[in-house]
Length: 491
Image 1: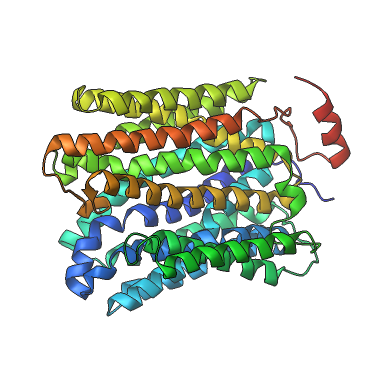
Image 2 (image 1 turned 180 degrees about the horizontal axis):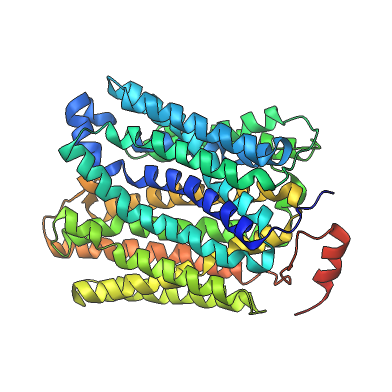
């Protein structure tokens, strides 16, 4: 098996910077669109379809994530990444030129086909050039990029929509894509690519995409377009289950499956991807609905409500930073991730009991603690997965991780939206209102939402209790026998 030769520190830094520029391209696109939605609806009409401007992107990007991971392992990181950026740029052009809402939604779907590969590929490339023992430090930069995007994206989207033109939120992607491609091309010239002469599992890819699309359509349309118990929604859920079962049977019979069984069966990977499904879902769900809490319970204006998430974001970056730096020298890193998870649970429990009593700054302090605790999970989980696989399966592992995180986020947002609706809150996101018309109604509804978040966090914590602490390799990925020997040594 070919190993990546050790890189000089300045070359490694150049590769990481190039990968982070690509990540910024994807991260900004997920945060810059929402502020412009009212303007887009007023300009193009068909405002009833506005939700699909967001949903179409997440639908396609989540569905194709595993495919990108396998492509990166078989055809190489560089051509796969260039292809993803090109598709993303094409989708951006379609969006910017869209004369109608259906064309805009189509463009967003195309954007998602490209964007679905960017996040996982960035983590794969960093995993290629950085030894496992040092990767947690670099994962901190990934959290920082997401933090910058979560702040700069909404601000830029609002400015473009109000003072220039809403299409600028898509045109801006073209120079960013050009800079990202140029940067990563220069950075990766010193890194030999990984390829394998194997046939791509097109049948498995089609099955996983179809099953994911059916499942996400059921979650998107359930309770909105059709009732949860309607024949249409039940048929979509049934299709997702049947297609998922066919896919599960398929992967055990194919040598180069799009999601290989031997990777998914690894106890470290199985634990981390399962835990992040719940933990990431709880975190994203909380971040989506907290602005609504600031509006309906705290009585803030929409702009101020958005800034209320700053404490959660900064707490997450701080937690990831601390965990990343600590993972270089601590051996019992499971204790760190469990401690962070427990802190997030405790802070969310406090929110459920005291959010409407402690005032704005009290809620900000609790959100900062939630972010601080949750932030430890991301770098430690990612590095643990990268440490568990050979380099030729790194793309698949990162694809599976990104897929489960995205799927968990979609499921969580849908479930929490249903919790609020059942408790008296109508609508989702910026257009939401509280039916009862009084703050106590909204406050009571959010107690149930916080409780649901705690359930997701607790399930994630319970799964993380089974995380194996394999010694982190300090060099390039070890061979299978070497790794097996390392696993027998207890830290």
